[in-house]
Amino acid sequence: MILNIIPLKILQILFYLFPITFIFGNFVTNIFILLISLSGIIFYRSKIFKNNDKFITLLFIIFFLLILISSYLNHFILKENPDVLKSILYLRYFIFLIVVRTVILNRHINLSKFFISILFIVFFVAVDILIQFLFGKNIIGLEPIYLKGEFYTGFFKEELIAGGFIMMFSTLSFFSIPLLFKNQSKIILLIIFTFLALIILASLLLAGNRMPTILFITFLVTSVILYKQKRKKLYIIFTTIFSIFLICIVALKFDNIKNRYISFYAGLPNPLTIFQEIKKDYPKLEKYKNTGVQFHSIEEFEIKKNYPNNLPPEYNILPFYTGHRIIFITSIDLFLEKPFIGGGIKSFRNYCEEKIHLPNRVCESHPHNFFLDLLNDVGILGLLIILIPIVKLFYSNYSEYLSQNKKQFSDWIYFTICLVIFIHFFPIKSSGSFFSTYNSAFTFLILGISLGIHETKNSQILSKEIINS
Image (tube, rainbow, N blue to C red; front, side, top):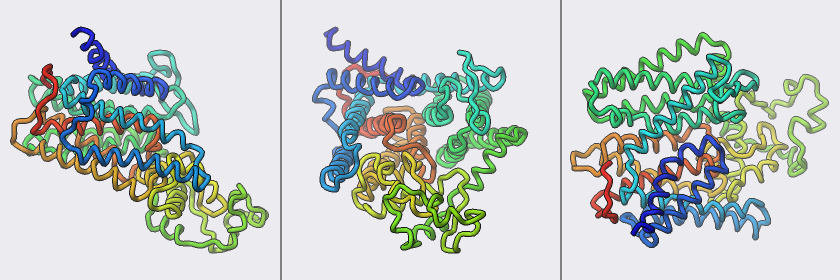
């Protein structure tokens, strides 16, 4: 009996510690994913394949199979995509997904405590960034980095991902405050909510990651819209408006922060401009395709004075700004060549060089948007297959949140997971690669939790050791 419990205890410890691994990097995160998956398989065995919604599970299976099919098709038949091996290794996230789902379904993790523990981690990381700003060093002596401006990265050293970490995990933990302070008055909760929102927003501004800041503001606004109790909604409205107003006033006093957001606003991709550029043909430039020569380096244009102002009118060079507009143009260009099942995992970086001979194209490691990344790698088919379960999970858990039925979990947990899904898959956000360790680990963590919560409805808990959450 004791030997049977050991894998469960290990699994629980690994699960609670998992968010911290994002601070230590991809290697540690991957180790934890492997250990969580192995301990889950050892403890649950065949139970991990028992599910109450076979349709959603089937769609996830098809999605992972499509990654394999697309990658191998492009590698063996079209003789392209050297990253084919990664499509096999990517299957680890499917195992991770179903183990997380099974943990939640069996109630072997107290979700209230899990979200509260994440809240402490987020608060600690955010305060560390504020300490780095105020004293020039964080609590372990790391200084901010300078890359065309000052970035306060805290524990993340030279990686500009502190804002992404705080934003992702704050959305998963922000509304655990009522779970932590159950017996406090509404006024006290309002003060705590507002204080935490200000700490998070301040750390996001200092980290220099503009999109996470905007997404956290979107998270607050969305919470106002989705929250069901009209009387208590006023408290969330106050927190949102006051926090945004105060943080904007503070931000305007720092020129580097203000200029960063002005340039971000100026560089927002205009859909009309993007589609106009995609429709253009450049027959004169076809001879430079696959030569590795970039448009601005083509000799006949390079010799012109005042490049690019003296180019012929058909070559309309768009301002670079943040570069997202040009990356989006390139990724849509590539998607249109293989629209149905894409070019295989991480294909953008393998094929983008085919487009750099054209104006307003660039080669990067990924398209900086989840939806464009999926369209490039698994096409329209893959995007639809993954979106259907995501939408269904959001709808199912939000419906349960609105219902008056007796629930397996706190309303705050249903509310939180719906908000996280909405923000994480917000269509127009710029982001890292969907298939990176950082994003995939978080993606399949929240989808596993959401699926587990969804399947607890009208189900019998498999385990006799039920922990109240």
